[in-house]
Length: 221
Image (cartoon, rainbow, N blue to C red; front, side):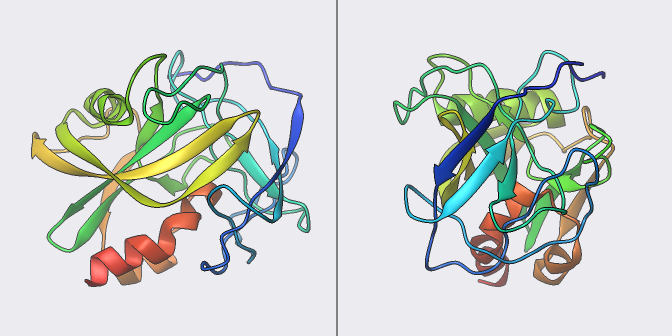
């Protein structure tokens, strides 16, 4: 599928930090994205300085988008998810909730490999997308994972901190239970089940790395 051609030019500055977490934030550059990671902290509703820039949507036309995050102290690292089209989340009352689903099975976590945009192609992420107006996080996860993986899931247990995407958008991860179906890469290049050690080494999209401590703990628990 082909992502929208337009780019969002607006830039937002927000303030976020999660003091209990270590090392993950990344600089985004439309001209030179890399897969390297750099260490600062990010988190819930709070403290540090994070600059977010909106980039093109996810890998499929007409679907959800996520924002790329840029640390104010960094300048040449990898881009991440983007989000557009403000609406109010039915679960939080905040605009633009973007949801990501963490599916665990037999001590492994399911990751999906992105197809586009070029700066993110080949990187891995938790599958998901943007909630529709009036849609709860759980309903959005059921719909998105049905569309992306061909599976049915249930539940929506928060994982870690929300990631501010600028312009009122927030990316949140939720643990979901696989109810039926075998995951298939319907809108991604590939799927992969990873253990805690593999999760440390794999090239995640920058925004998803904020959840590494919680995801590792769950895999090792």
